[in-house]
Image (cartoon, rainbow, N blue to C red):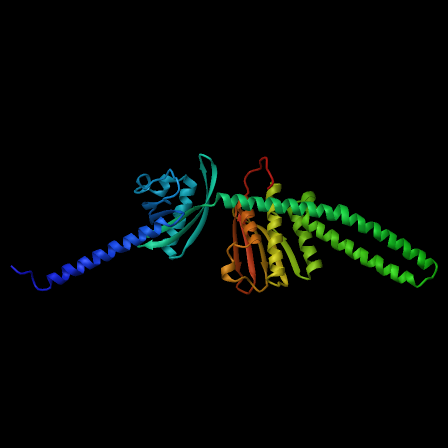
Length: 353
C-alpha cells in the first residue's frame, strides 16, 4: 500500500533536522573540548545538567559524580548561596555575571573566577577558571609595591630631606652674612634659600605619600585628612574627606589597604580623568564599611571599568584582601566613583601584605 501523500517529505525533513541537530552537537562538543576551564550547565534551581573538564588536565571531578546533583549539595554553604545568587541573576537579567570564590582544597586554598551566562530556557552555562597563580602574582605585585613605596619614602625623608635641610641652613647663614655687609648678593642667597625650602617641602610631601606616617601614628581618619590636604596643595584639586564617627577599624592591615586603594583612585582621577574636585568618604552602611572616592573628571570608558590595568588590578586585589568588593562606576553628573565595601573581621593577629 503506497504511503500517504506527503509522508515521504515528512520523513526526509525529519531526517534533515536530526542530521542537523547531530552535526550541531558534534560542533558543540568540539568547542567544549578546546576550553581550558571547567564548564557547567546549571538549571535556575541549581541542578547540574552537564559538566565538562579539559581533556588534557587531571581533575578529580567527573560528570558522573556531578550531573544530577545541586550546587548547594556540592559546595560549602556560603559558596553555594553565592553561586545560586549569580545563577538566579543571570537567568533573570539575561546578562553575563562574574564572580570570584575561594575553595579549600587538599593542597591549600585555591582561587576561582566564574563567568555565568544564559544558556537555554531557565539554564546558565558557567565557566570556572582556577586563577590561584594569577592571584598569587597580584599579591606579590602589591607586596613589592608596598615595600618599594615604604623604602623610597624613608629614603626621601631620611636621606634627601636631611640633605636639603642642611643646605637650607647654609643658605640662610650665607644670606645673613651678605646682608650684614650690605652686599646685593644677599637677595640672591635669600632666593636660593626659598627655593631649597620649597624643594624640601615637596620632598616631605612625597615622602608622606609613599610612607604614610600619619596612618602609623594616628590612624586612618587622620591619614585621609592629611592626604586630602596634600592633594589640595600639590595638585590644585579641591579634595575633601568626610567620615562617619561610628567607623572604627581594628586592623592596621585593613587601614593600609584602604589608604593605598584611595591613593590609586585619586591618582587615576587626577592623571587620567583630569578631575577638579575629589570627594573621599568613609562611612558605615549597615554591617559594612564603605569607602568611596568620587571625582568630576572625564570619566572612564565602559570597557575600562573592569580591573585590567596594573593599578586597577592591585586595587581589586586590595579590596579582595580585606574581604570586600570593588566597583568602578560612572557618576550620573560626570566623573567616576570608586567604591569598596567590606565587613571587617574580629580583631586577630594580622600579617601585612
